[in-house]
Length: 231
Image 1 (cartoon, rainbow, N blue to C red):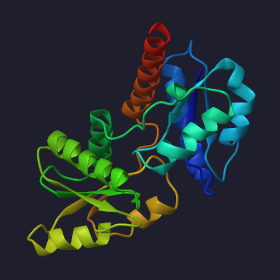
Image 2: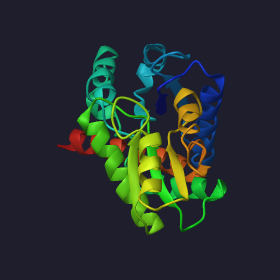
Image 3: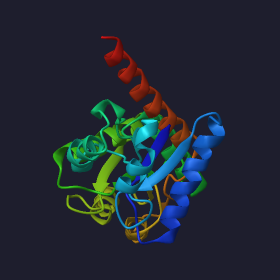
């Protein structure tokens, strides 16, 4: 069983987007039971889902784009409380080339031309590991696009998307596109849309590459669990 864990939001559009992604994962592998839960602000909560499904020994796949406090501390503790080993926790989705594929497609959908300078707008964090993950994702997107991508952060760190776009414009790049490095619509996506970029992509949402990556993280965790059991 795959239990997908999203951050959660008061914005119903965010929950709708998460459920659309989970549906896309189910369609790719219909024989697999796939459910979703949320860290905060939406239901079912992680504790509710683990209490309900613990006997099915689910693999928890965080719908998170980087490794931060939740992945290192909160989620292992929640699994331990449910009586599940930490090996049932998959890695964060990002950074990964499949996300670069999805980001590039979203930029194309937004109308961004191939010559535009690009800013990658992540949620931001006070955790250096999470910031490093965003920088790595910018490098992966740069390799995909064949041009430089500047990482930026929507909270807790600099540069902000506004600052990154302005710096590129001041450096002689009048046309700047903003790649929204978020899974779902909501507060941060609305903040990203206020940056002075000529084009701003939509969140990743239920892009097919993201759905494939969710299954890849599930398979990796299952394989690691099998290796530990055989040791």
